[in-house]
Structures are given as C-alpha cells and as structure tokens.
Length: 582
Image (cartoon, rainbow, N blue to C red; front, side, top):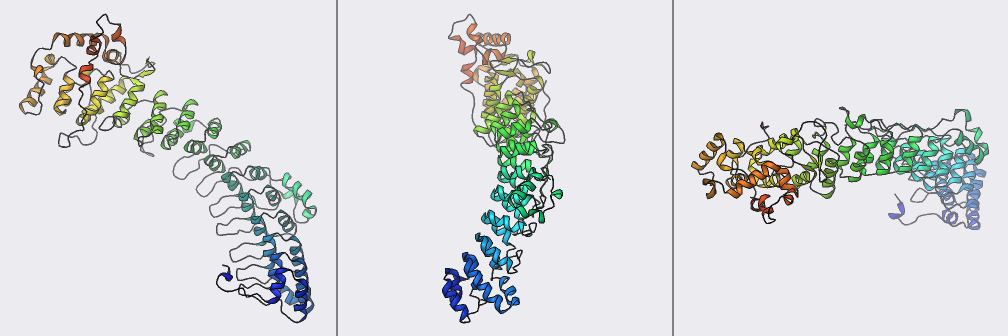
C-alpha cells in the first residue's frame, strides 16, 4: 500500500533533500542536528529516499554522519524497513542503482532481507531486469534459492518467466534447477509453458556452459561457486503436481521450438501426463490443433496409444476439440479411424461415434467425412446417432461416403468395393443399420426416404415390426416400392389387422393388381439392384425412352416422400432394442 494515498507527503526536510539530491542542503541539515532516522508516514527515512532515487553522494553523506555518531546506529539505519518491509538496499536493487548498493553493503546491510510480500533485493532486481545488479548480488553471495511471492517462485523461476537469457545464465550456476513452486513446476517447466526457448536451452545445457559464463562475466565467482559441483542440466521430464510435463505444456501452448529442444534433449513423449486418463504430449498437440508439433510427436510416440485398450487415441481428442487438421494429420499418419473402444472412460466406442454426437458444425461434419473416408466402421452405436428425427443431414453425410449394396452383394469380409468415390457397406454394417432403423420406426418419415433414395433394397424393411408400427403414410410410401399383391401371408395379416383397426388407411390402388408399368420397373430394379438403379446413371444406358428414366428410378414416389416429425402420441419404443434382421 502507498501511504501517500491516505495521507499527505510527510517527509522531513532532510528526506526531501535526499530525494532531490540537494547535497548542500542535506549536509547543512545534518550539521544542525536533523536525525536521519526520522520516518515519514510510509516508514521511509532519508536513507530510503536517497537509495531509491539513486543519490549516491547523499547516501554517502548520510552513512558518514551516522557512522560518526555510532556504529550500532548505523547498522540499525541501513537495515531499517519501511511499512512495506523494504530496506534501502531493496529499493536501490529494485531501481538498478549499483553504486548505492556497494555503499550500503560496505555499511553492513543485510542483502537478503525479505519484504512483507516475501520479495528480496535479488528477486526485485531480476523482476526489474537489472542485469548488472543481479551479477553483483550473485557475486556477493546473495541467497538465490529462497522462494518468493505466494506462488513460491525462486529468482530463477522469475528470470525464466521474464525471458531474461543472460540473467538465467548467471543464476543457473548457483541455483537449484529443480526447485518447484506450489504447483511443483520447475523453472524448466515455466520456460516450456511460456515459450522461452533461449532460457530452456540454457537450463537443459546448464553445467559447464553456466560456469564458463559466470567466470568470464564475474571474475570473482570462483569464491562462491564450486565449478565441479555444477549440475549437468535441468530435468526435461520433471512433472508438475497434476503430472503435466514440460513437453506436454509446450505442445499445448504451441511452442514448436521448445518442443524440439525438449525432444532433442531426451524428453519422453510417452510419459503419462494426467491423473484422470493416459494423456500424452501428442494429445495436447492434437487438442489445440498445433499440426507441426503433432507431426513431430507422432513420429516419436509409441503407437500403443492408437489401439491399446488401456489408452485413448489422440483421434478422440482431436474430434472432441473439432480440430479438423489434427484429425486429418493423424489419419494421414496411419492412426486407426476406429481406434480403441473408450465406452468405459469416455462414453464412446469410436472416434466416429464421438464425431456424430457433436453439435452440428462444419468442423464436426469434416471430421465425420475424414473418418469415413479413412474406412471407419459403422456399428449400431453410430447408426443410432444418425437414424432418427432431425438427423437426416448426418445420415445423408454417411451415405455420401458409403453405398448400400444389394442383398446378394453384401459381404462380411474381403476388400470393400468402390463406386463413384464411395465405399460399400459391409454385411454387418447393413445389419446394424436395419436393426436401428426398425427400432426407430416412429421417425421413419425422416430416414426412410433417405435410405430408399440411397439404394436400400425396400424388401429388407418388410418386417412385421415395421408394418405394425409405421405411420400410415410411411407404410403407404414403403409399399409403393414393392409388389404389394405378393406380400407374405404373415405380413398380409398385419396389414389386414391394421386396416380393421383403422390405424392404416391404404391408398386405393393397393386393392388392385399393380399396373404393368410398376411391375416392369420392379423387374428392372430386381435385375440391376436398387443400389445401381437409384444412385447411379446406369438407367441412362437402358434402351428405353429417356422420359421413362425418372419412372424407372422411382422419382415419382420419392418426390412424395413423407417428411413430417413423428406423432408424439403414436407407438413409441423406449431406448434401443436390438432386433434380429433376416
């Protein structure tokens, strides 16, 4: 607190002369008996004023006058503290007045006195960037390892934080390189966190280099420094209280040069850096989109993090943070799009499932596209996130990357076939889709047109559950894609019951034999397959008049697709129940 904020300046005439450097007036006042020990409302004496203002001659005159009276009074004066706990030596160090420091030290001041906030002259000089003062204090044997401030930083912490390379070179030779603050962060950790590359290099190379610099810049340093005892460098793998490492924090903050220095000096990229889950430095780079750092770490990180059951793939982190470039980089470097199942730890079985659960945005859609292009598999969990009301966009996004083969072309293994830049769904994936679709019949108005337009064989949906639970218009829409007159007896019984219960209002022509034109296009579709007929240009190669192309592709039916939200009072299935699909 500055007491002049509360009270007017109450300095004595002697203090005023010392502050302004009026040496003649100062000497005259001293001769007439004015006491140098007189304090103002801040607890300052004339010596404090002269030291803070750098008035070397005034300091010398005050010291000489008091010394002539009593050596004991001199010792008391030079070590007297303001109400803030500041000595004259502290004020001179804080302001960089080296000549004043020499005078005060010769007069017997304690160079290590602490202020009320635990600062000391050396720390004040470091904080203010006074290189010459720091050199002098270190040479004179000032205490360097005492902690200062509430966060328990040492002078070396502060010099690194400020990025004062020359000052760090002096301090590393006499400081504890592994001193930690209240979060157990070492000076090297601080350098990595704030991107102080020069300071980081000094710390990892500390030893002979620091000793050489100290001896060359401070010839008398050998009196305080045992060169043979200098450490070989700070620990690049030290960890803070939360297990964060310097490599992880540099990767998180995007300090590429620091990452390079740490790796080049033995930092372990496979160190687990979290108490909650097995987080590595590569996860931080992926999370914050620092692609250059990510590529460097991918090259040296154990790939066990990609598929290991006890790990979490960095793909999860990249997807969750919507870092598309990170997702692209990891997939390009061979990370599995399926990764490991992290249901127990994250609540998701795959990165794709996580991407599909994200709020709709361009980065999340881009992540989905990248994962699908890389071959991510689709299980029931993924289908559950895209089959339902208000999810048409995501379902369409998947079908833009995957095409649905006909029943005869479905395969459980073997290479996936490509068509027009899309990959074929496999048998298990189609089964998962059908199971989820049949469990989401109440929202079929949203997903059924999308699936049929994507080439799904309609007969796969002709299941008793579908016919029993579907909305009347949805059921009519589905029946337009089949020969309703040849339905299996079990399905016919379901329709008859619903008609009698008045829960299904069939279109009038369903009671008649299908038109020949409709039977013809059903035969064409059966021959070519729904996937070819609906989604490709194969219909244009048929030797039929071009006006029939739309009809053969069922465009007339698709344009009348039901697209309204489900009726909240209709049949509803709680949760997801796996349904066996034939």
